[in-house]
Length: 93
Ligand SMILES: [Zn+2]
Figure 1 (tube, rainbow, N blue to C red):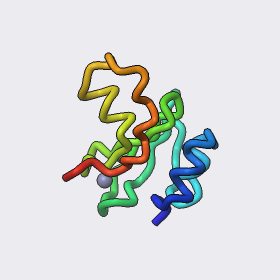
Figure 2 (cartoon, rainbow, N blue to C red):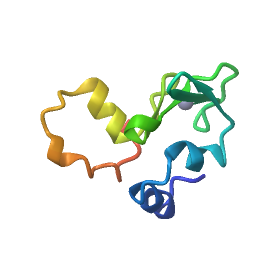
Figure 3 (cartoon, rainbow, N blue to C red):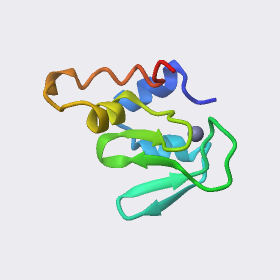
């Protein structure tokens, strides 16, 4: 498990997220994304997607993801000043 305080600190230090996650998950580059097998649920088809552009990730299989992705896909982007909420890496479900 890498979603520790250390991990989040490293995220904030803007280490490329694909490097961090790539230490534990085998990622494959697809266009400007990386995909791999989700570390949060068993699967055989990669649905765990890393978005380098937003330093975030999301699993389309189980819904695990960082807040940044949730915000950019499910919510309006009308709160640009709130980009520092990435400490909530797990959605509340
Ligand atoms: Zn998953």
